[in-house]
Image 1 (cartoon, rainbow, N blue to C red):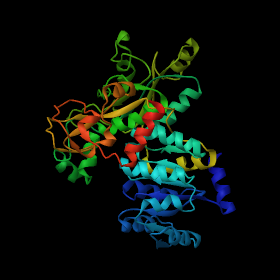
Image 2 (image 1 turned 90 degrees about the vertical axis):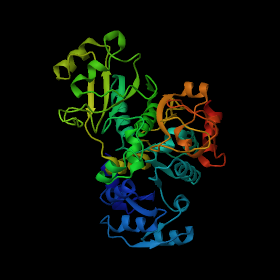
Image 3 (image 1 turned 120 degrees about the horizontal axis):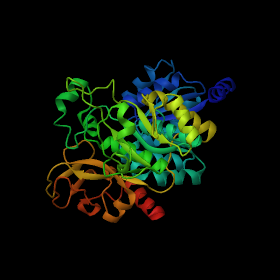
Image 4 (image 1 turned 90 degrees about the horizontal axis):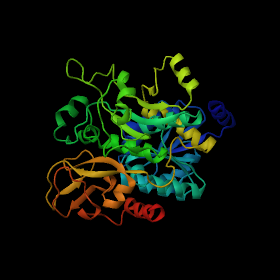
Length: 438
């Protein structure tokens, strides 16, 4: 078993050596959990605000000495001395004596650079950066395979949690009809960091981050990662995103010919919570904050077994994991990558879906597009072949780019509508991915 193997690594004095980039809430949470996990140790941490890196290590409870070291030689000396090396430059981390690099930056460009550097250095990559993965995950996965290392998104975040359920269902021979996640709050495709500023302050959240969820873009990014890792597709652009109770899911998620809303089987979905009597999200009866599958089978006795096990009358059955534990589950992804050589979730090949940039309002040429959660655009999942045919702009490439022509509200932006930074690593890998997979 995996935890036994990790204990053996501890006993041998050879724990998995982890390098961490990014010490926000998620990165700090990962460091906290690794301290309490057998068979692994965080040996190097980078954050542009180096004090955040120092605090993340010292408050984790590991009792380890911290050494500030902004060069590879100095950081290597610190690690050799049993200290945790902290630095401001993330590109130092893959050059150190680590087994796996964890990216917790959340920015597409930095995610591209981190993964590329780590793979080139022969290090496994475990990424929290779904924003980057949704754009270039397929090419990064191919590069990792060619280099003999693992590229994986994390357990704990919704894509990894859905991926775990999908792997389980496929392994035992069930048919996956729908894979999805429950959103924490209703989706407003036009929400932005300014309209949500007051609510963000009350929740003590970054308003742009809050808006990236409320406007649906982060949910679409996460389901794009699931799509590329499973082959499931969105039924419509952005998914149906219909609020639903748990007890009505197997009725709503039927084909149109069966009285449901879907035009096909094998899809990804986002399911917001239903409102309660007070108008607030009714979390007690919704899928939030969990993930789910709708499964079926072609065998009569298996249907009978589902019914006997109180899973409903069929022909569809809800498999619901009512939680995802974010950073707390990351050590499991580290262990499976390094010990088993197996990703929590990674692309199956070329892109299946992308997340495209859709105008929240009428936009004039010359405006700067600020990406997910900003006032200009939201992101909506779409099938890859449509994105290619219509030359649509990936959400991950829409950060801090100038609009070259007027765009109407609700219109999906095309690649030629903006001035892209063609020198950035994200753009270069995206073009490499297009050349490799079409």
